[in-house]
Image 1 (cartoon, rainbow, N blue to C red):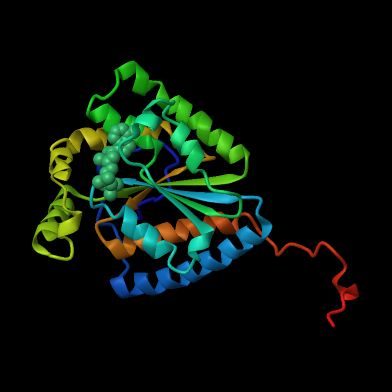
Image 2: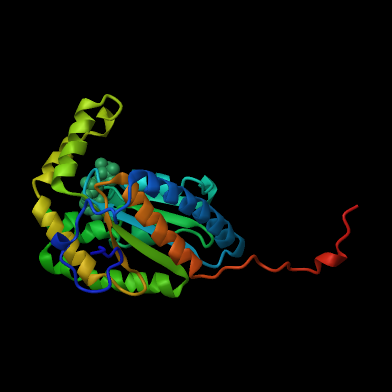
Length: 264
Ligand code: ADP
């Protein structure tokens, strides 16, 4: 049976296979992804020409799930000037001196641009919950606040697409091992990733809750099977193309009567 990507009702993460590939081969998926990526670049041009909407691609997932890789591939043909990328790290002292959504709102892209959120304000109901960084009533109240924040964005012409890059614990082990064994990947290895891995089940539960409480028609979650990098990129690119095509954008009309313009 086909595994859904977009979340439209309550889900159990354990029902979603991280190695799902819709019966596709790597070659087939890569070929399709390239076409979709070209289309994304065309649509970004239209978005920029009109500059009255923008698109936020929000990427969440366990360490090694491919948040960086997916963003790089899907936006391969989009000019860097059209993309505003923000990585949400451990909050700075200035960020901690504000409400948790302050840094997210500051990171919202200009109209006409794409915004990539590599991690996001969802960390405030994920790592914060699992590692017990604030009292339970504080993080529990945040799901509703996040829904309100995303409604505000949606009402103001932001398309918010949220992607959970779903990898298996075995695949993460293989990717962590590669970071130790491959000298070109050594720089990516962090001991803290092993610490987080110990809390795997708690994270899965926190993700499941965030997905169930914050999947709305105006800011849907997508569960992206991410054990196969090529299927991950194909699935994300497809969602991005569909969302942008729904805008039915046209090239803006000239502001003056161009037939009267003489270029000498
Ligand atoms: P990445 O793993 O995304 O490539 P880092 O290794 O710098 O980048 O990890 C960023 C770390 O910041 C992650 O462990 C993440 O859980 C943490 N983080 C992000 N937002 C918050 C937050 N609001 N509170 C605590 N930790 C956070």
